[in-house]
Image (cartoon, rainbow over all chains, first blue to last red; front, side, top):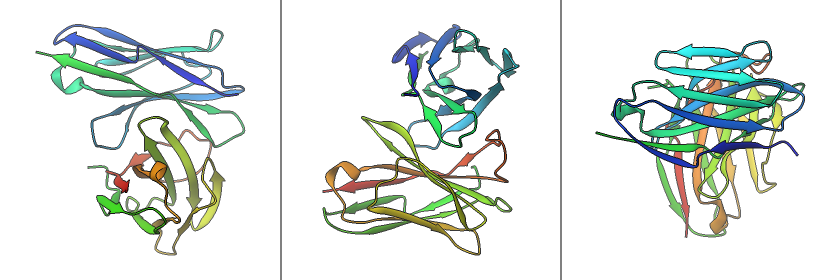
Length: 112
Length: 115
């Protein structure tokens, strides 16, 4: 069964600190992996998307990595800001299928 | 603002009832997706339409149905509602439907509460 597991479930950090969120998946064959940011009560917003051949992609202070061999991805947030407080969701697309598999998300709280 | 609009924002109804959620995609987008987000299940893909035709179906119950109209807006119909249907329902749109790498733009969601 295709699964996407995210860790930690929740994370509290101080403003200005860095953090890394993890995503492990069993989806096969792999097509692409996307990270979303979802503010409370709002729709998700895409941060990055990576395909099999990509192992790093950045979007401002957000850097995603992908290791397709170990089926792991991480999202690194640098110099966190209060506005980074949100849920971060990892989504993996299976090759040959439209149906995406969602992780349960990591809830990040940034304290001043 | 993603450019995707959803109405209503909130909906409170009783078990056994039927409701219709409406979505207007971004201008020019041909593809519409529906998702359900509940506290215990997270985000789940329900169904996708492209230019009026159903393209992919996910974990959508038989009590639920959707359609995309010629003006490209979409409606999600939920019938015989149960308490467990209480959730946030998101609509998203994208320009095309190709390799699955297209960026989807999510609406603000409709919060459904079934009492």
